[in-house]
Amino acid sequence: MSPELAQYLLSGITIGAIYALVALGFSIIFNASHVINFAQGEFVMIGGMTTVSLIGTGLPLPFAIVAAVAVAAGVGLAFEKFAVEPARGAPVVTLIIITIGASIFLRGLATLVWDKKLHALPAFSGHKPIEIAGAALLPQSLWVIGVTLAIVLLLSWFFGRTLPGKAILATSHQRLAAQLVGINVRTVLFISFGLSAALGAIAGILIAPITLTSWDVGIMLGLKGFAAAVLGGLGSGAGAVLGGLVLGIAETLSAGYISSAYKDVIAFVLMLAVLFFMPRGLLGGRITERV
Amino acid sequence: MHWLASPRTGGMAALIAVAVALPLALTNNYFYEVAILVALNAIVCVGLNLLIGYAGQISLGHAGFFGLGAYGSAILTARFGWPSLAALATAIAAAALLAYLIGRPILRLRGHYLAMATLGMGVIAAIVVATEDRLTGGPDGMPVPPLSLFGAQLSGEATWYWVVVALLVVAVWLSLNLIESPAGRALRALSGSEVAAEVVGIDSARQKVRVFVISAVYAAAAGSLTAHYSGFITPSKVSFFHSIELVTMVVFGGMASTFGAVVGAAVLTTLPQLLTAFKEYEMMALGAIMMGTMIFMPRGLVPTLAALAAALRARKDAP
Image (spheres, rainbow over the protein chains, first blue to last red):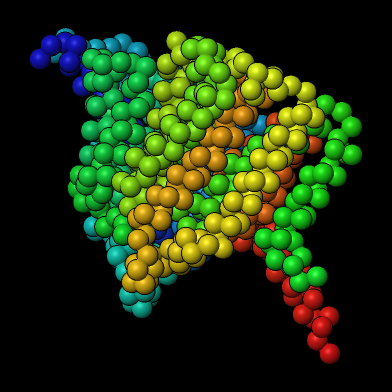
């Protein structure tokens, strides 16, 4: 393998892991509520920006991170309570517009709370690159990949082994039946928004030392996470991870070998190809609503 | 006075009356400018409302068609020296053709998946415009020559006002007629239940593609005129955010209400101009309006007010 290719693959996996975390957030909410939360990207932004602010006040990094994730989760819960809950049972178009409205609202709020400048977060453990197969790997990339891996394992344990996790899974399969066996589906919905907001925030914090963060970072990361979720199969957890990685690698490869100006197009071209030709995604998520 | 109650006659009369009376209130060029932008946005919204409100198909990428009209006209006139009317016709035809070609695969999708696919198309269009800077001027945008009709240059705010308002009246009239035609009834059947529509013999794919093409033509025409009128065009007009603004105008004014689309465009185009002192709150306000409308009056302003008026009248008539 040429060092060039190795370098592209390593960066692809790093950014792909971030897309995977965002995509997981989309899938969790979609499973629990059949809502596509277009505000998912804003949680990424809130995570990164809050951490930057808290560090500015002198808080040590680990505490700042925990607090920022909590803030994002709180915003997610409030969003569910005050915007999604009142519109339950509304048509898809209505729900889409509510979540887009929320994302624009949060972005506007961010320009007031913070500013329109770019902010950097210090890397978690230095900048000294590690050499692998002739390619340089930033220590922060290891953090991104490691934390994503840990989260994926934790989530599969949560959904497979714990009662609350199984309750969420049950609700996503058959809402009415879940309700009949005594699951409080409202609580499930509530928790799933908090959980996916926290996932988004973690993604935003992990990537901020590499790509910087700002008030509008959520737009592209949100849209690409969304493309990754569709690519893997909407609603499928494993699909979200696979979709994220495929997207990340495809993006860095095309940036390296084809055109860096068009690297952002790849995500959407792949998403459209999947929607047109295999609408259930790579790992066959829920059946696509088609006629 | 029965004819006044029907949207086709009464509503048209009201629209024309407002359009004719409005210049009395337009005491300076700035007011004219706002009114012209309102009318141009209203044209896009009337078309988009046919798709979203009547056929029940969402599009989060209509800024792409708007941009195709705008940049099509701009590039053909500025870079290739075409006459502006020929450029306008070509840009609109290109938008119609594109909508026809992508319409079939894209409109097979429904709900969230249709939203994603149209969003993807829109984002791709925005990236292409920002990247192909030799043609489009890139992120900085490009100047657009003025519109000339048969050798005469269209200039002056008042002239533009009458041209654009006349086009809006035509656009509204066409839309109202389409809705009342058999094709329009077929569309409304689609938004109710596509399966039921198929059962009674409606070719749902064909109907959807047709209304998609119509809405693309409306958007491209307004885009081309906006570019000529402003004299400058930037990629922000092709952005995802602009697509969202257009959808918000339609749902705020009232889905499945042609005049609702006009009112939505009027309110949401004027509001930022009134609130320039609070510029930094503009985004928050737009987001709050979107959420608030959907939660508290999901049918939109005009249908909600109409229902309210009908209820009041019923109460007055009751003994």
